[in-house]
Length: 64
Image (tube, rainbow, N blue to C red; front, side, top):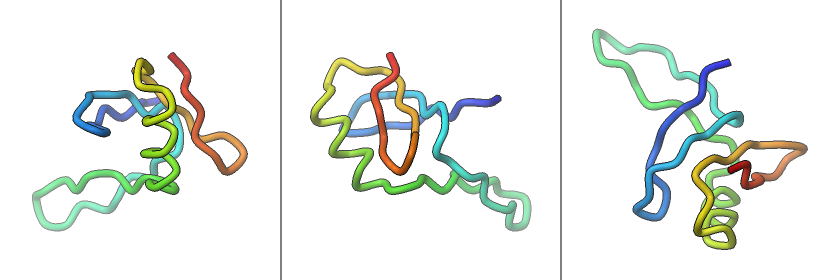
C-alpha cells in the first residue's frame, strides 16, 4: 500500500487511504483524486496535531 503526502490547511500530512491515482496526461503526472475533500478539511480542523488520515466507511479519520 502506498500513501500520498499532501498539504492540508498549510500542514504536510499523509493520506493512507482515500485517494485514486489519476491517469497521466502526456509526460506530466497529475495529483491523485481525493475522496470527499471537504470532509478531509473538516477532520483536519478537528485534529490539528494529526499527521496522517485515512478514509474509512465514508468519512476521514485521524490515524496518527
